[in-house]
Image (cartoon, rainbow, N blue to C red):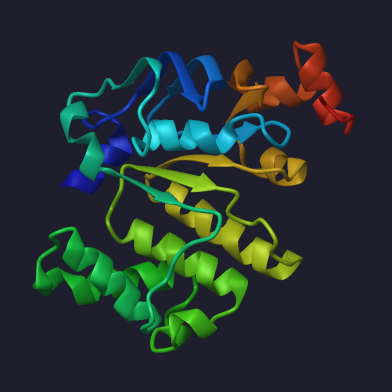
Length: 247
């Protein structure tokens, strides 16, 4: 029943709204007066040069760090349950010294999923990302792309309503990147809202329904991806899309 409700967007934790969010560390403001809104069912892509604040913004959204100023609000009817209804996959995932399927089962156990459900959820998650043949392979001997897909499967097995992905194809070769993209598409098509960062403009053009463009810790533009790529409104966004270096 939960999955049906999330697919329709009638009940859930979304939308997510960041209002006037700033984050400071060691006397430096790294994210500055950020406003962001993530709608149910969307696939949002966060763009910007290195150091723009993309990863920090994901961490703020996910609740890993608290804003210095401003608010992070889950506005859906079930917003109070947001902590257990979202997941994040990091650019360099940490995998346990055990098999691929055992990594997923361990995550399910830690999150209180009944033992009777763990085998089916693990099998379905591995199928979803194309890793079923490697279920018994030790996770730490998998290729970089396979490890990234395993981390994605581990997160998705928890049935998150929202999934945050930080550079999911960074440092992957084209074949591994394509496999990861296909897995992300499949998960989004099944009803999971996704917000991801990427440096790959081609990937952003293929994926994004909405774009969030950051520069120097500020949200310069956000809106439908088609509008952003066809006619960016700001000088910084036009320069970024043209491949110019932003300082």
